[in-house]
Length: 333
Ligand code: ADE
Image (cartoon, rainbow, N blue to C red; front, side, top):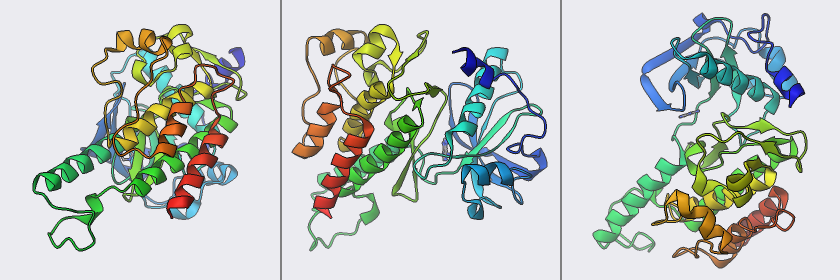
């Protein structure tokens, strides 16, 4: 843990290749994209190339072609934020610099930490978070059902927005994409600790990217764990060992991914409906698991349920999960 602490203490750094000059960033303050634990996320635009960060990014393999004059999302900490929030935010920025580039992550592009307000500049995802994205489509499809419009029939002549119809194939595609991203993270030695549909962003209606690395930690190896001190954590997404002992590993991310698979296949359903978060641990330790949702394919449910194996050794890893889901997708295609 000491060396981890050290990684995050040399802030703010002068001559940091990720550092952006404030005049090279436009923030649309009326374009609020969301608000997190601290600060808010705004839509923005990079002017020219991110000054000087070229070397840093090419080292990490970021595709520079698309970084100039592009739309971005800016997470900004208000100047009046307390010292703890500020250091947590700087830690998140430091961690993101070490993640490396991956298509299935909401990648960092630049930051401003030489003066306040601190900013973290990341890739912009045009369709917001996956939870809202799915719920919107769920509502739309239910409305068509109410009007007795059979949108699944190719002969259906009623007018409706085909893009709003989610097929099992599209849902499986989201799950496969996210599993690629999480496989990458776990292989690099990171635990995300907040794997959930609200933290996945959607771009151009079909690409899922893992975002919000506020709780993400480097744990050196896939089998190592991060011992948290508790705090506000999403109980219904957590594994029993994470709830009971605050033990976070790549395998606890796997458990959360199973819950995320449930959210996907139910188009934004809430896990364990009718059960209070305080009762979840007892529920799980008595051996209960969520049932197969309506319209959920058997092989999809089988992967989802395997994520909820109590034993860490028997719980599959992300490579295995990614392979199984990719095979299922191949069979549909
Ligand atoms: N909301 C939070 N982060 C976002 C991003 N990167 N793109 C779009 N909306 C967001």
